[in-house]
Every structure is written in C-alpha cells, then in structure tokens.
Length: 162
Image (cartoon, rainbow, N blue to C red; front, side, top):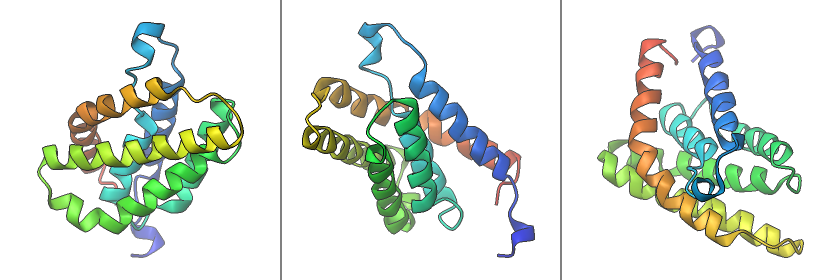
C-alpha cells in the first residue's frame, strides 16, 4: 500500500486524543474504579483494524503520553501498551473473525495483561499499586468493548480510513 493510499490518519490521532481525555477526566471516587481503559481499547481496535498502520510503535508513543498525563514512571504504560499492541497484531487474524463476545473476552485478557504489567512495574519501583482500581477497570473495559468496536468501525467505514 503506497503512502497516497493511507487515508484518515487524522481520525486515528483524534480517537487516541479522545481516549486519553476520557482516561484523565475526573470522576467521583465511587465511579473512578470502574473507568474502562479507553486508551487500551482504542489501541486494540486500531491494531485489529489496521495492523500495518497502528502497531507497537504507536502503542509505545501513546503509552508515553499516558505516562506523562498520569504522572507515572516514564515508560511503564509505554511498555505495557507496546506488549498489548504486539499481541493484538500477532492475533489479529484470529480475533477479527471472533464474534463480538469472544472479542470482548480477548480484550479482557489483553487489558488484564496491561494492568498486571503496570502493577508489576509499580511494585518494582516501590509505589503502592492500586490493585482494586485496575481489577475493576478490566471487566468494565470488557463490557464497553462492543460499543467501542461498533463506534470506531462505523467511523472508520464512514471516513474511509485505510
């Protein structure tokens, strides 16, 4: 695919900006622990839909942005999202043919893996990890995956992102 055939890069960037904004949006503490991991869901979708355009490098860059916005150790989210992007691209041909509920189960595992990597890295540097915050966000991410998938697929098809 030549460079001229790549379209809709602005939509991909805009979706990541919106996902980061949703991740840092302040919420009441009772609801905060159930916040889906919007950035990871967006990364998984674009890695499934366009594995040649969105990959490990994009996962790393978005992870660095997450580290900066969350005032975290530089590289912890970057490493976790790069691994999620790698696994998603590695499994994208299988995951694309799954029914939406099986995709949601796969997303559960990928988001759980990302959270475990971040927890492990926080433990290595001596920070107290918010285990329950991450544990509750994983099923929430799985539950919103069908809506994220349908919305981003609709936008990708409407704006002919290739």
